[in-house]
Length: 132
Image (cartoon, rainbow, N blue to C red; front, side, top):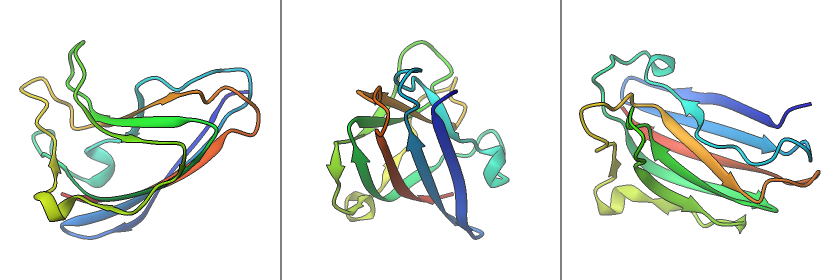
């Protein structure tokens, strides 16, 4: 059995999208590492598009997680850490959004890495509002 990673685009408009991600550990596989959560093509966007993170809310039980944009290279471009527990709503738009500034090799893919998602019963979900 493998960890569950269920990604659902629950709303998508011309300029915005809302994504719901549900995660559950199988108790054997271990942490997710650079798991693709969302690609530009899933949003119908060209390869040169740059996403902006607008808002995030998470609820993680037994682990924490990190979001980043794929650079297409070895070095990473971390953007946000979601701690274990119920996270507050974070409205990045108050600060001018969080941009994909991962450089010329970027793919636009949002990646997820977890730490501590190793026990049966570890699960969580998060909502991510994105500006295209």
